[in-house]
Image (cartoon, rainbow, N blue to C red; front, side, top):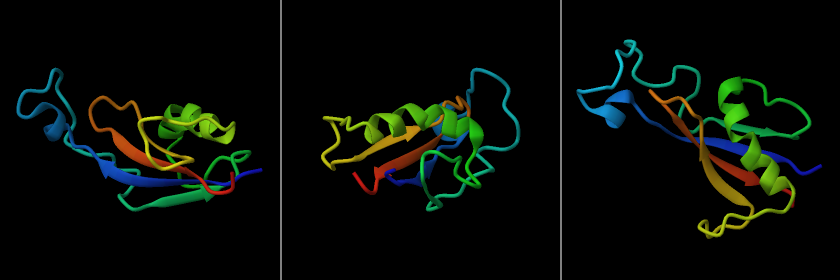
Length: 102
């Protein structure tokens, strides 16, 4: 089974998203505390990547599956890769997903 590499490329703060006027009162934690920029996860998709945020993984899993089954993202020039993000509306994390062995 093909291996997948997930790399954390950006953590977006709630200040970047909303400036000084967020639509709801947010906590004092402005960015995701679970993951770090540059952190990598290389794994076989039949297992959950150790150390990965379960919420984020659930959000990006459809893009992982799309790549594994030969899908492409026409707006991405690199083959077998895409960008995806978690759905945390107050401090999202953006990931680069790569199929290592197509």
